Amino acid sequence: MDLQTIKEERQKWMKWKNIAPLREALDTLACGTWHVQLGDVVKIGGEGIDAKSVKEVAKLMMPWRKGPFEVFGTYIDSEWKSNIKYNLLRPHFNLKDKRVADIGCNNGYYLFRMLEDNPKSLVGFDPSPLYKTQFDFINHFVQSKIVYELLGVEHLEFYEEKFDTIFCLGVLYHRSDPVAMLKSLYKGLDHEGEVILDTFYIDGDEDMCLCPKSSYSKIPNIYFVPTIGALKNWCLRAGFSSFEVLETSTTSSDEQRKTEWIEGQSLEDFLDLEDASKTLEGYPAPKRVYVKLIKDKK
Image (cartoon, rainbow, N blue to C red; front, top):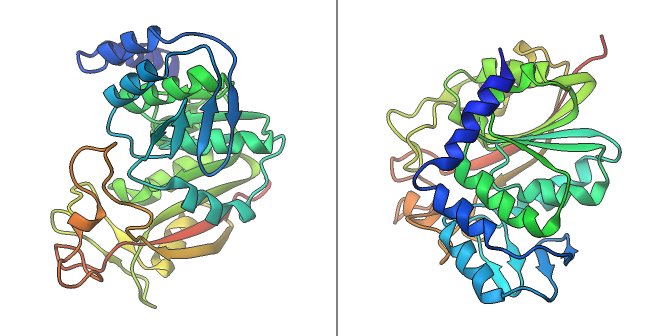
């Protein structure tokens, strides 16, 4: 697979009629050196820039799914409080001097948080020109060396470097062949590498999975929601030698909700109005399992 050709073709996406005006707005932002605080809220502050113009550019880039960010006094209250997930996982990894990838990185919130660990390199994979533009907006001020590729998980095994740690958070259930995707993650790792994986699951002791008829929580591209036992089997079939459950959680309105920074609906619109333990379709409401997968030394 000629990744360089794919990269060049996808750069043309940045000229789409809905993206080009956002790129032009980015070009109007002043350059300089500002203060960056990496915490639950990724904060950027300082002087020498028109805060009103910054807010206007940020608004153009809606919807903001991941965050939160605060940019020169503008609080970008994203749909997801991504700090909740990050803080849940933080005790389970150490990225110092490691080559790290984030698959489905969205606007890069987790990548910016990972800068605190001083990894050797950080690469985000996401084929969305809107999320890439949001990343470029934040990184215009952070001025990090994070690399953002307009690529998907299917390109990972062909990428020019292998990784010590790969994060894959909230992607697996969007793939119609989950085992094939897990194999791609496996092939993207260096020897003894690890994957931090997050996906939906259903309760149950049997090795089985839910196959939604047409949608799950009003999301059409959810193909399989496994029990933890079935998920483990998928991971072992993909070649991983170790499967460790780190945490489980139930998605709540504290973590995902409507804000002025998104368009459309959010979690409260996806659940049964009379029974929040069920989706609108009558399936079990979303629960997440977080696991660590290890690739053996060869």
